[in-house]
Image (cartoon, rainbow, N blue to C red; front, top):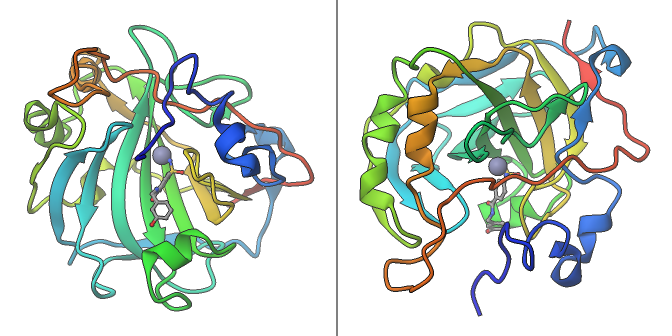
Length: 261
Ligand SMILES: NS(=O)(=O)c1ccc(C(=O)NCc2cccc(O)c2)cc1
Ligand SMILES: [Zn+2]
């Protein structure tokens, strides 16, 4: 049966609850972050990203986004500190983006979206044996969210956009060695944090979100290259440009957002 969800009118975010009832849960993501309602918490220390030994493996089109996967067979690259009780192991990163000239981020800040959002996914290998187990546990995942705003070319993003032609269609994957996501970080690691979920099915409520306040800058030309990707496989008749692959903000319910100082 495969993935029967997408971002279209019939199979998009408003329909996901039919197969994934947790879509209407109490800790769903993304959310609208309202900075002056976030609670500054002096107990929240800085986050540390230990990516120097990271080993990227491949870049793939999974029919929903473009994903760069890492070797997560040991603790060579982890995120720690901040709201986290132990190190979380780097697994993959991927992006969400809009159509030409319109918003594309998942989280918004005081109602304002960005052109795109990068998600760096980590899992709690201290408490759980596999990613699959962690992805279903309330403290299983830690996802770093980084906003992308339009401006000049990003000096390192070309390493990713140059590879996109190799993964144009759903199900395609190609080697992608030697890429360190540290080059995609903004200068400040100040963040907001809250308890949420995966923003795509199965929408598990297993994510400690760490959303960086400072966006990185990419050009319209670079973002346009993501839109040459396709949701469909090479053999499918219907050609669908991969864009607007973002879930809109969900109800905050009984949650608070905390802010690093
Ligand atoms: N957009 S997101 O960062 O919230 C996100 C991160 C990871 C995933 C993901 O890993 N999906 C595949 C999956 C889900 C549960 C268990 C698995 O083994 C794999 C989905 C969304
Ligand atoms: Zn994501």
